[in-house]
Length: 260
Image 1 (tube, helix red, strand yellow):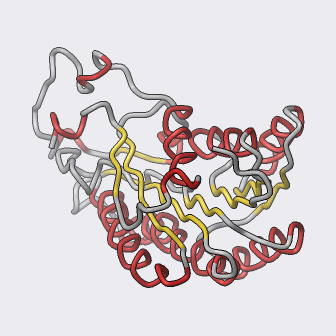
Image 2: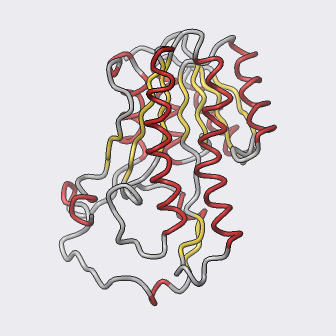
């Protein structure tokens, strides 16, 4: 799945799925714009790519801020003269709490980062993608798409459901420019996203459901890895998926079929 000569913007590239995808895309020849908010993590991702003889630059930006995203995308395009792949991956868990406990500010923060951030990432990259066509991949979740039993995850699930709708709208709007837009929906994956969230008072509303043999049938309850998700991102970024657009793909070891 050679990506030699192509340029990829990867958000949330400092850790987890974003970092794994940046490393794999670079291994296949893509030049990487590693975007995130934590300078030290981004620099480590860039160093890892360069150690493997790849090319990458760090782009420090908050995906929910238009000026920062516009500047970062322009910086990437100025560096290599093109953008071919966008992996809109950055996001947070936010606050998981009963509706009475969830504040408007907490709701807004989750939607601003997860949904507005996806919008801004794609919006500012589109003018460059239109020049040659390309691929956009959005990270959604099993939550809000197949699973609704994580009571209290209302803001998060709504943001993830909306990302799927956004993807389908963009797939049609951008098809004439040969831009494919797809969305991946990971289940339980070993990442640091849990560090970006807070759970409050969930015992009040959580349904008492237990899965004695584990929640992930394919792997006897073990979560997936960021590297497994990165392989899916690589497929969707490559020409191997050149007739796939507007599609959501669940990568969860059948977890959502059991819990949905």
